Amino acid sequence: MSVTARGGYNMFFGDLVDESRGSFTVGGLIDREMNEMLSARVQLLGGKMQGTQVFPTSGLEYAYFDNVYTEFSIGGSYKPLNHIMGYFRQRTFQPYVHLNAGLVYYSSTEYWGEAGSGPQDEEWRSASEIAPMVSAGGGASFWINPMISANIEITGALPFSDRMDVHDVWYSGDDWQTEVNPVSTDPYDVYYNFMVGVTFVIQDSKLRNDPKYNRKSYIKTRQYYQSKSRRSPARRPSRKRFLFF
Image 1 (cartoon, rainbow, N blue to C red):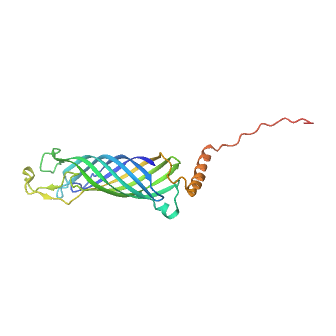
Image 2: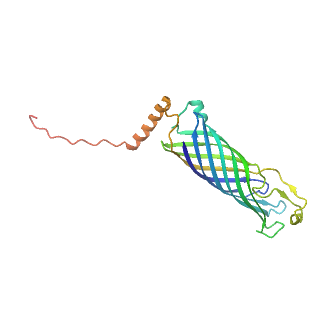
């Protein structure tokens, strides 16, 4: 079992967003091996999202949004090199793909821009919701020592909601004031996370009794510790010798 602390950059794609779509994400992951190729994982992420919509004719900001969000998901990962080359916990480069499902909570606010129908920077509307979501992506771990690895991961998430940017309907003219004649936008929003992290092994592999794993792991970890402790041998003091001794 391992725990990964991570942080990175998210990009939001929705009806309201033409530019300025990037913000930050932080979180953690717990991963447990189930067999040589598959692992179960539980992930908790949180952060902020943002985006801006540009008025097409003038190129000025029409509206913008920001939100805070928390995502909880459960899923699994598949390690192809363990399938192709055989299981090895201490593999220096370990790529994987993953699939998850869970829930995302968000609290979002939409504001008028300088080309909007309302006063600039005034709140237009807001939304808060817990929605189901699915995500998928890939990543890789880089072995540093028997207890620590570096990790990179890219994930795309699809929440089953169109209100993470609050912009699920729009109105022509001054209809927004009375909220009549709404026009629905395209369904669903999408966001991507690009994260780096550090993985800490907190429990040895459940496959540690496999003879092949034991041998390869022993050789690699022994070489690691030997390289850390290798020193030039101390010179033995010379002994004085006498004629008959």
